[in-house]
Amino acid sequence: MDASLAELDRLAEVAEDVLRRCKAAGADEAEVAASVDVGLNVSVRLGETETIEHTRDRSFGVTVYFGKRKGSASTADLNPDSITKTVEQACAIARYTEADAAAGLADAARMATQFPELDVWHPWDIDVERAIALGLEIEDAGRAVDGITNSEGASVQAGQALAVYANSHGFTGRERGTRHMLSVSLLAGDEAGMQSDYWYDSVRAADDFGPAAEIGRKAAERVLSRLGAQTLTTRQCPVLFAPEVARGLIGHLLNAVSGGALYRKASFLLDACGKQILPAFVDLIEDPYLPRGHASAAFDAEGVQTQRSALVEAGVLQRYLLSSYSARKLGLASTGNAGGVHNLLVRGGGDDFAAMLRRLGTGLLVTQLMGQGVNGVTGDYSRGAVGFWVENGVIAYPVEEITIAANLRDVYANIVAIGSDVDPRSHLLCGSILVERMTVAGA
Image 1 (cartoon, helix red, strand yellow):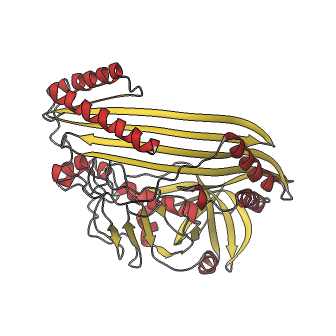
Image 2: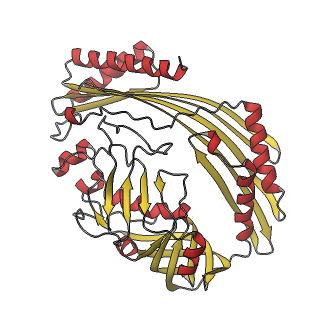
Image 3: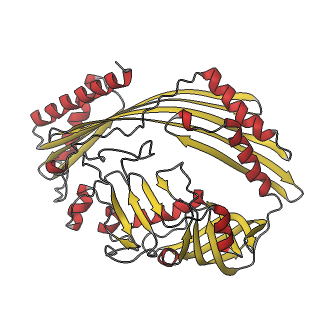
């Protein structure tokens, strides 16, 4: 038998035993989340091995409910004595906690009953020597490009995660997944100063990696393109977000329509359900069953069945992202999003990146963002940016030390186009986004 399946069975047995102990201790309801993460991480720099790290992290969390009083405790040790103490601590906390009318397990009728094959389990049979060789190949390819003067190193990561969630409804769900990453960061300089940039790839199956050397060459291309960067005078202009930063705009929208922000009234999209928040050509589709998806799952963090459905359709917000707790606070029903969204497909266009540049015309292309200047309550957005000034659809020169600003409501309403150049390295599958107008300020 696959060792991972045997480990999942063991975690499930421990979880179910703990649930019985919680009931014996007087808990009305209980839930257990257990996980084991195993990985290899190798880093190299300037042709030498820097670090070799083997990881095996464990987590075991128990939550009990005495009526509407909740207590939680966790441990990283699966020793029976440690688990016994963890259960005792959770029960003790619950007995002294204020009652919360929204507390409790998700509804029993919502527990997952369908578990499709998601194709997310692909262990990478790579040893330390091969990982080192692969890291050196990536770094060497980047350093071989004329103009590259130094390296901050390359890394190779291979990871496996096992998880079990069980609760006193009788639900026990097992999950396993793999995630592997290759990355490198390089430096270059000229009379104007030094620049650094990086590139990476992240996949479920190592077979999905392209040629490793391409990661090094891509990082080199990015850093060399930034040499001679200028600043800009303050202006208003169109802004094109490259795919790797465009998904951040979608992330801010997801935060604003999440239950926690809504019931705290800390969202600029309060009462937005059923209203137009994006242009009519934009759809956002949640697809938890996407093969090899970065956030594919048959059930959420509470055991609720996930489902493929529209979050935004023709620009209109169809629903919020709710756990059972936030749903009860809002007088609504869970949407199966405890723990977040499960793969979001951003649909709204068919133009490739070159065509998006032409649509931009003259304006700013943003390739990196810095800082945390986003106010989730008001929607005010102001962040440091790096990128390129574009004239007549052609990149003219690199720019840095600039700030872009607007209100996110206006940003979303003024999206002109979304590209087909989707970045596959995230659970937010989004192409480049062109915004009609934002304020750009120089240093």
